[in-house]
Length: 215
Image 1 (cartoon, rainbow, N blue to C red):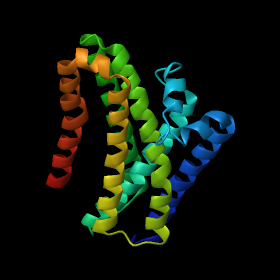
Image 2 (image 1 turned 120 degrees about the horizontal axis):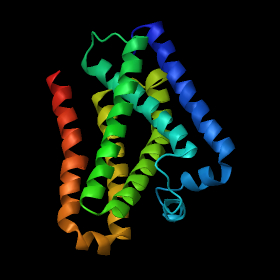
Image 3 (image 1 turned 45 degrees about the vertical axis):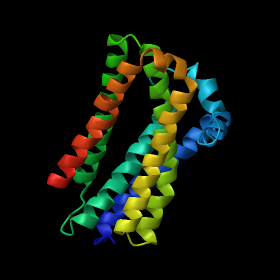
């Protein structure tokens, strides 16, 4: 459980901002949002909007910001669970949100660069769009989990593992969706695709994990 009223207030502000971003997205893009929330079990959204994909559009930006705030809250709660002396201040949460944003954007730019270098830019752009869609969907799922951990359910190792397993499952579904949709193109570029997965899908998170357990 959180230890100070101030921490609760800060987390509540981020939670409310996230909910406001979701509501704004739903109002501005009602039809797309209704299709988007079914993305986990229906590839219709990906097939339709992958053709219209841009580097960033307002729909993705709004949900991406909610994802950042959701991950920031959940990450802080996990950090507080394993570090009982942790103090959550406004600069700490803002810095964490900034680091999450910077990490994801730099990773995205690196992926685009790799796609151009290996001449598989179309495949990588489509994969990035699908990953972004699943990340934004995760942002929606984590909101109620954060609310429960903040105000109802005490955080424990079990809840942390279960949430991390959910995050991993959604990522795996996204990867399998890409492989299924573009299996012929992947077969033609299998070496580069495996190299991409190792360098930019596995290595960055492994490094982050090593940093986290070493800090």
